[in-house]
Length: 373
Image 1 (cartoon, rainbow, N blue to C red):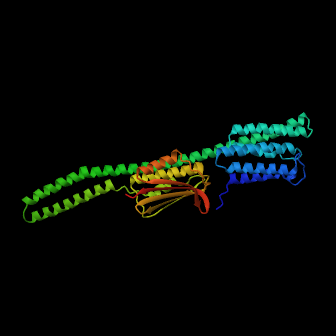
Image 2 (image 1 turned 45 degrees about the horizontal axis):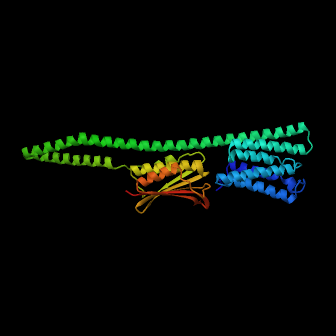
C-alpha cells in the first residue's frame, strides 16, 4: 500500500533540492576552499544528519543531529562561495527546524544563516549594497518558509485534535445512548412489575377464591380464567426478568460508530459472531476503541487502523494494530494508562507492542482481553 502523502512527497522534493544545489561542487564545476573530499564528506554529513533528525524518535538525538546539519552547512556555504544556489541548503534547514525543534530555534537559525550568506557574499567581493541585498533576500525567503511550515504544523495539529475530539464525542454518544436504553428498560420493567404484575396477582387470587365457590359450568370457566391469569402473570414476570438482565448491545455497530469517518485514518472493525459482551464490558471496549483511535491520530502517523474482537476461550480479546511508524520504546501516557485501568477493573489485561507487523510493515499494536461473563 502506498502510504506517501503530500507531506512525504514534499519532503522528498526538498531532499532532492538540497542534493541538487550541491551538484556544481560535487561534479567539480566549482572548487571549494577546502579539499574536495573534505567538502564532499561534509555535504554527505549534512544530508545524513538532516534525514536522521527527521526519523529519530529521541528528542535529544533530534536536536544534536539538526544542530550538526546546521553548523556543517555553514562551513559548506562559506568554503564554496561560488556554488550559486548552495545557500538554498540553509533555507531548507531553517524550514526543517520549524518542524523538528521549535519556531524560536528556527528563527535563531534563520538569523545565523543570514549572517553566513552575508559573509559569503562579502568574500566574493560584493559591496555593501550587494551584501545587504543578498542577505535580505535569503532572510525573507527563510522567514516566509519557516512561518509557512509553522502555520502548516498548527493546522495539522488542530485537525488532529478536532478529529480526536470528534472520536471522543462519538464514544460518549454511544455510551449515553446505551445508558438511556438501559434506564428505559428498567423503567418499563418496574412499571410491568408494580402495575400489571400486582394486578394480575390480585386477579389470580380472586379467581382462585371464585373457583372454590362456583359449581357446574361456572366453575369450569373460572378455572380456565385462573389458568390464563397465572400464565399471563408468569409471562409478565419473565418479561420483567429479561428487561432487567438482558443488556445485549450491538458491539460491532458501537465500535464502528466510534471509528467511522475519521479524517486521515481508515478504521476497519471485525467482530466474531461468538462475542457477547454485557453493558459494562461494552462500555470498556468502546472506551478502549476511543483511546486507540485518538492515540493513533495523535502519535501513530498511520493511514490505517485495524481492530479485531474475537472469543479466545473464556476471554474476549480485542486487538488493534496500525500501519504507523511504531516505536522502539513504548511510553505509556495518561490515555493508555487509563485504558489499562479500565480493563484491569474487569479482571483483564492490556499489552502494547511498538514494533508490530501490519501487512509486512512496522506498526503499533494494542491487545486487551477481558473475561467472558
